[in-house]
Structure formats: C-alpha cells, structure tokens
Image (cartoon, rainbow, N blue to C red; front, side, top):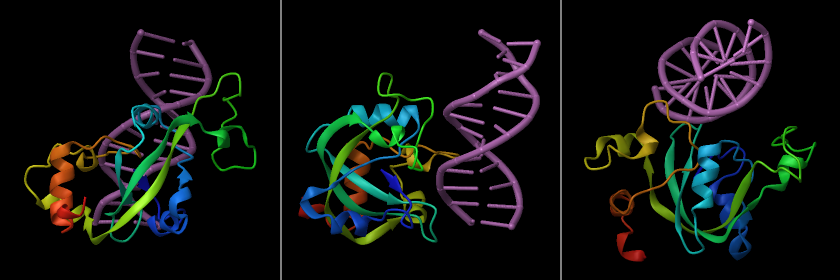
Length: 152
DNA sequence: GCCAACGTTGGC
DNA sequence: GCCAACGTTGGC
C-alpha cells in the first residue's frame, strides 16, 4: 500500500498503535478491488511515494476487511466523491495496523536492481496503483533485503 | 517543476 | 462504443 509521507506516513501509522487506522481515500477501482481481497491478518508492505527517496519503509497487518469508505460522502474531505451516495457507494477501505518498521527501508532504486522481482507491479513503468498485490516471492526478497526475514 | 503514463469523462 | 481531452500520479 502506497502513501505519501507528507500526508500520512508509516510513522503516523505506528503512532496509532494497535487501534490502527482506516485506509481511506483510495479512488481507483483496481486498487479498491485488491483491498476487497484482503483478509484479516494479511501482511502489508507500506511504501512511501512522492518523496525524495521512494521506498518500502514498514510492515503492517490487515485488522478489518474491506468496508465502505465514509470519506466519499464527506463534502469536507479531500476524498469526497459527488458521484457516490450511501445508496450507491463506490469506495471502500480496510483497517490496518503497523507491525514494524524495516530496519533499512527498501528503496525503489534497490528494488529495480534486484533480480527476481521484475514482475512486481510497483516496478512497472507508469504504475499508479496505490494498492497492489505482492507475491510471496517478492515479499521474501524484500524482507531478506530489509534484513528482517527472520523476524516474522 | 517537468513530463510520461494512466484512468476517467463526456461528446459524438 | 470510440476516443480526444483532461486531471492526476509520481519518479526524476
């Protein structure tokens, strides 16, 4: 899951502790559909985008499955969607909780340099998905390079 | 700040 | 249903 650290960082998520947070504001159907497939307990990689060194910075966990994103109905929210209504909601989100920060963030540059993860959606040119699936293989490589493969 | 790539919108 | 125009994302 991507987030802009200026808006909401992994540190912000950590600060919320075990209560976690509702992952609001996803406004892309493909990303929404990926969230629908998430299950409680699923591991999540948190990626900082639109920053000086884009990188996977921490791990999180799904604590509640997909439900309606109420911010779509809130005219005061930056995520307000005039075409959505409580009768016909468009957007959803999951609840996530931080588990731990990576000892060393895995930068986009690092990711591009490693063999075996060329098919990672994150690395695709022009990729704009804010939520995407990660294969077990990619997860393993990322954790290994973050030097915490034994922590889970 | 630039710009390539993408998703969405809306006219036809 | 097509597709040009537009707005947004996000790396650089």
